[in-house]
Image (tube, rainbow, N blue to C red; front, side, top):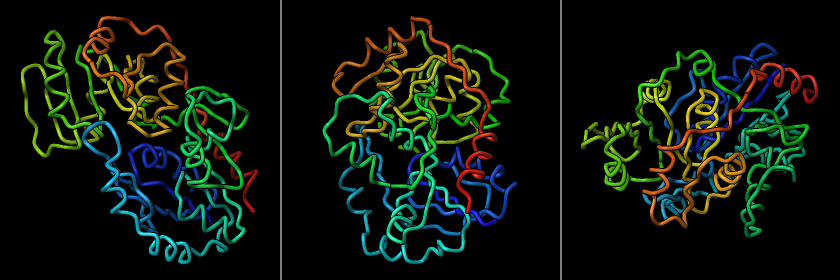
Length: 328
């Protein structure tokens, strides 16, 4: 059997999930990997056969997408050309983790594909979503369309939705609590964060920033460039994680039993939905409309987190079912 696994390269969550799924897929046949996008800080350990430009959202420094840089990075002629280079008919199974080139190539050529992603869960009307303008929902629906959907979310809201894929390195971590708080907000400059965090001097903060190349310490705040190994070590031993409204990062923190505070990116519908779902569990959220972050962060530090999450290891069973149901 030949399997094509197409992965979105914007953000770290898609590739982190793929690192867990690829070895499972390889039990069923030969797996070719395709990645489009350029905004990830982690890499696959397996060889990538197709590296495409795709469409990437470029992170800004003020809590949202850098629309100008995102627009500059878009290349529609290249997108259309890349669509024609993928030999879709060679594959018995095509899986798509919110990757648009392969998704639209399949759609236009009439080839079936399976959307295997967190975003796939949004096809269900049962998933919590805030009220939003229609275009945001349309982007989620048509950015990477598929013939079938298998989704992941914080809860099994529908029969095709499963709990998060938690990496083995996270599941096998030795968890402790050394009293510090870990911070990862890729769309916010550390120069904005540090002055806020310093106003809570009784707490030690370990900030991982996309916007610095050098490590430094300012009072009770330690800032480091992105480093997956150091971040995992910090996460395993922290009291809580302050992060964006992504999916895999918050899910891993909740699996480890860590307190969680999220600040979803402005104008990013998926992150708004994730934060909305977490808010329903009673977890704190800093929305774009919150101008003063300090009281929310102070309250989060002082309060215990009551809701406990259970994410069983069901990834192998999900992949077995996908292969059985959709391979041709």
